[in-house]
Each structure stands twice: as C-alpha cells, then as structure tokens.
Image (cartoon, rainbow, N blue to C red; front, side, top):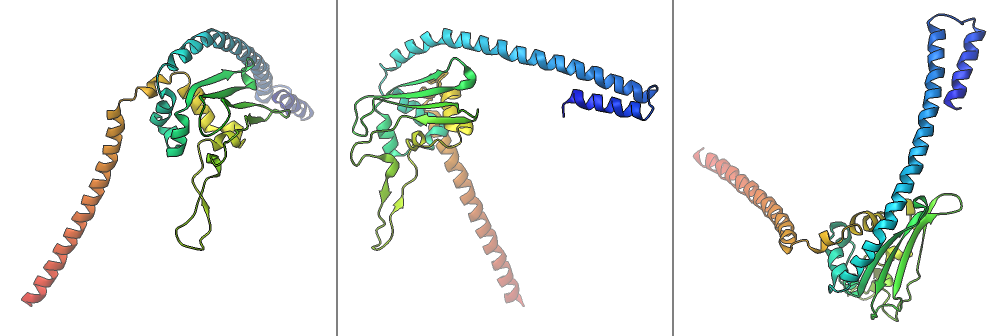
Amino acid sequence: MSTKATAKKQKVECEKDGISNGPDAQAQDAIEKIDELQNEIDRLNEQASEEILKVEQKYIRLRWPHFQKRSLLIEKIPNFWVTTFINHPQISALLDEDDEDALHYLTKVEVHEIDDLKAGYTISFHFAENEYFENDVISKEFHMNENGDPSSTSTPIRWKEGKDLTKRETQNNVKGKRKHEEPESFFSWFNDPGDAGADELGEVIKDDIWPNPLQYYLVPEGDLEDDEDDDEEIDDEEGLDDIDEDVEGDDDEDDVEGAEDED
C-alpha cells in the first residue's frame, strides 16, 4: 500500500472513531501534507535522474574521439595491454602463464557504453593473428533482457586445435589417477554469462582500467617488488616469532631440568 493510501486509510479510521479535532487530527493532517511533499520530491528525483542521464550521454559522445586517439597511440606501445593487466592487482590474480602469453597478442581494448546507459555496455578485445584462436575481436556485451534483468552475451571463441585454454587438463604422475582440471583461464570469463549484474571483472575493466589504463601500465617495477618484499618480511617475521617461541620453550625446559638436578 502506498504512503498516500495509508494516510487516507488512517484519516478514515480517525473519522470513524470520532476523532476530528485535537492532536490526533493535527498529526493526521501533517502526515497527508508530508506525503504530498514526498510525492513532489520523488518527481524531482526522477526528473534529476533523466537530466543526469542526458548529461552523461553527452560526455560519453565527447570523450569517444579522445578514446579513439588514445587507442591509436597505445597500438604503438608493445605489450601495453598485457602489461596493464598484469600490473592490475585484481586482474593479475586471474592470469596464469598461458593467459599472459595469449594476451601478448592483445592490441586494443574498447569499452562502448550504449546510448541508453541503463541498457548496458560492450567490452571488446582486439587481437593480432595468434596461435590460440581465429578471432580478431572477442566481445562481451552486458544488457537488460526482456524481463528487465541484467544478462550478458559473448563472442564464441574459435580456438585452434589443442589451444583451448578454457579446457586445459593435466594428468597426475601416479598411474590410475583421474585427470583434474587446471584453474580457470581468464578467457573463461567470455564463456560465462554468470550473474551479469554482479560481474566484477567487467566492472573493473569498464570503471577502473578503461578510463585510465596508463596508470597501471606505468606502475614502477619497484612498487611491485616492494609488495613482494613486504610479503617476504611478513613471512620472515612470522618465522622469527616461531623461533623465539621455540627458544623460550627450550629455556623453560632447561630451568625445569636444572631445578630437578638441584633437588
């Protein structure tokens, strides 16, 4: 039941109970006026959303020529995109050596937002000729389906024989053991419609990498080494703590043994 309908219902109930004056009547009158004001606020919020959408669409169109010029310049930089992805903390965690090797052929990444921003966006990966697949462009589109729910569709990857990174398996050394699958490939993302409304990888590419990929390409090697050093220092500290505990434990045992000898 809407706020307005609830307010009317309360007013009718008050009139039935013979309450037409006094504090209760004043409160009821205030509720109805608040409800009218809230309806006006909601109307203004809807109007603001529509105007904000128009402004965003305007600046999407204004930014696009700059994105195109940027893409042309990026194509002159060897391994720009694979370096950018490797340097990104979230995406690098999804890459293994085979994925990185395939991404060395990635020449251009584009994020194209649909004019009706509510409808979705498309992420396109452009590749040079490579040993893994026949496609020169692989895309994933996020959109609303007929029911208004978020969904996604992807370009089928035409893998070359024996090169499908999404179906890798390895055989255990022990005879008779079953095969087990390797960790999922980065390229499995294109095959997985999943929950398009919560596609973190798509959102990272669209909202973090695409607006300014240069910040990740230019991550100094020292920063990455520092992170590794920090991890090593933490491990070293934990190791020292373990040693200290062992030493303290040994000292306690020596004290006990000494006391026994004195007795």
